[in-house]
Structures are given as structure tokens and as C-alpha cells.
Length: 113
Length: 113
Image 1 (tube, each protein chain N blue to C red):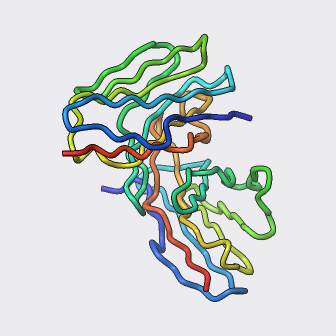
Image 2: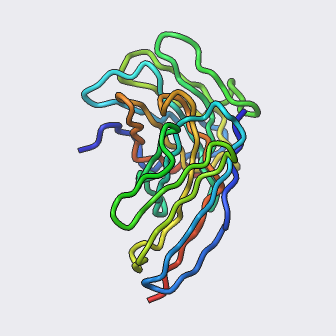
């Protein structure tokens, strides 16, 4: 079964609104989770590292005020895309590490109309 | 930061032939090199990985080689089958995989029956 679960799998939102994506580690605690973004026919790019109980670390070029990350518990990290625009439409995917193994969530398709 | 380059971007082979995909990395501190297969809209699927303390690893038809001095690693698929057709990504990480991944740009492999 899934070790890292992501929700929702697909979401459509109107331009200017916000949308939240959840990433949960199942049956293990993840003090660190990673958020990636993948535009169509492109590679996965790290957006930010989510740290439980502290601020996320954002990659260069990623707006921290636009992509809010909250890691309030050892099993849940959330990514909120605020004031979404059509150019934010992408595949967002999280990952967590258990032992030496990386587990990816199912991914979330975001479409901003 | 780390930079991973991947070649070729597309690769077409006949069923039964071998396929080779090559990646180079820039950060000499990287010590974990996974290869992923990804189908459209799905999470990346780990097919093989290698850590910097070994030079080669094989799993049935799939093998990975690592040259730490030259900072490059390659994926070899033998006896290709149509179901091997997909997009393949290489990646690199420090911390033996406990840290974020830097992905290559991807290779679209097409196996012609």
C-alpha cells in the first residue's frame, strides 16, 4: 500500500483563489518532506523542503509567500498555492524518506482556470 | 547546488536491443544516484539505484554504472520490451538519499515492437 499519500489527486481552481495540497506519511514519522513541481514534459524540480516544527526551506526562485508550506505534525505537510494563476498549473508531488528509502506521494494535478 | 545533466532526451530502439541513458552530476558530495521510470501523471517509480561506494549494480535486465571520478552514471537496459517505453529520470542526492533529489531532464524511451 501507499507509504506516502497525497490529496487531492486533481484539483481545478479559479484564478486568484488558493488551493491546499496535503502530503501524509503513513505508518511512519517524517520530520522532513520535500515538495516538487513538474510542468508538462519537464523534469521534477525541487520547490522546498518542509521541516516539522520550523520554517520550510525554499529553493531559489520559489516565492515563499505564494507557496505556503506548513508541517505542523510528523505525518502531515501541506502546500498552499495562494492567489493561483494559470501559470501555476502543474503536477505537484511530495516525498518523504523512511530509513534510506524515498517514497513519493501520488502527486496532485493543479489546473488554474 | 547540484546540477544533473541527462542525455539523450529521446531514444528509440528496436525490441530486444539495448538502451543506454547517461547522466553527469556536478556536486562531488553527491553519494546516492537513483533512476526512475515515470508514466504520465504518475509518481516516479524507482527502478534501480546506486550509492557511491559501489561502481556497478545489476537487477535482471537493468544495470547502473557509476564513475565517481568523472562524475557520471549510466542506466543500461538490455533486451528491451515495449513495456519499457516510458520517461526515465536520473537523479542525484547527498546524505545517502535522505536529502532532496536533483533530477536530470529526462529521457523518453520508445521501444519499437
